[in-house]
Length: 189
Image 1 (cartoon, one colour):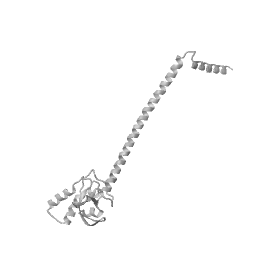
Image 2: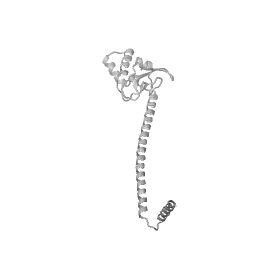
Image 3: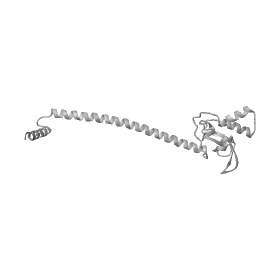
Image 4: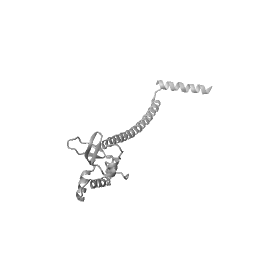
């Protein structure tokens, strides 16, 4: 089995769809053996006794594998399980460059792969949201810093203007005059 992405044979969403009309729809795992041989038409094992008829399927419906197989077999005009397996193998090994492709992990069914895929998508969305929030916070902090600088400059200008425009009766003027006289008296001695 090649390790190419975008092919059903290596996709976690490739499965075996239960074809029983009276039973609940269920997609079984396509095992390594199934993927290597194209034998995707039967499931036997726990919890179901006996063989259950299945058909190859894409859990995300990105490819209509059953239609592709029916068309290929009709064109070939041949019948039999060996021919069916051979054509199934050709269909699942076909390079599709599928956007829904997800890497296959052995012993996990397509539903498990889908849940893992959704969790990864949620985590990626969360990270992207966090990055965007951080960028917004950095931008807001830069704006706040600029505003703080302008407020500081305005406060200095107002303080200088206050000193320049105060009268000799103002408390601050008297306090500054006392400091200046103390300095002069201290320097003169």
